Image 1: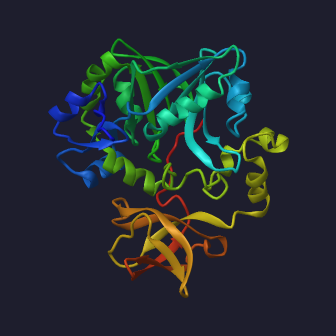
Image 2: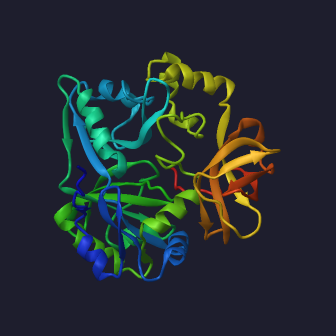
Length: 368
């Protein structure tokens, strides 16, 4: 008999309610989907100034020990040993057929590896790590820590006004910082396509920090709804949509995440099929899709040409920065050339869509 497990709550659950959030179940957590101003306003506030996101539902996992690098390399296509102190890499757990079990961030700080994994896959990922735990590796799930993201062009100014010295601190770097007396670990990263930061801190300090951040006139509170439209415009894959156990990184446009040393050694899970696609091209690839007219196309819609199924929509909706509907989807590689018109089939009704290059909105990361 199935039972409904109680939803987890982040340290900011009361904070969200007090600030007018509409809370919804998400990946086993009670999370804010939007606030009073709505998804479009939150989205544009992030693009134009700064958005504050509670991402504490994502799991923070720390690995230490002499064999930690080799252990993680056995599960990913990343040159983990090559991650320098103070640096961050995007990575993936892979299966033996080249499919993606999950995507994650790997940071090296204080000589240890600090991972952030998706909320919806956290239990799977933690079990996967435990099942492959190498001798001499210590693994700690940091459930006592919270995680906030500040994203948008004003994000550096927001942190600077709180006394954070960002001199020499660029995209995909990590370090220790003090914000209003709160010890924080900050990465210059995020999943909106904008410049921004993810801030890890003790959970008991999360509300005090969130209040300090939202008091800044440049900062708007942002829920899961706008977080999804932002990453859609940025062309960033989401597990369960553009990534799953049947989709490999090459098809998903993630060739950059396959480290050169690991490709040359061909020693990561699924190396055979992944490297075949890396060399020859994947038969279906991820592309942007712009529907003609004002009607959005949604996840799961089939893509067709001349009556033949040639792909599928994986994410779709309204893109506030474009003021138009937009989508992501996989199409036969020959049709991925920008400007190709195909049909999205929704309940038997066809909507013309045009393929376009990703990202739909340019990334604005600040690189060194």
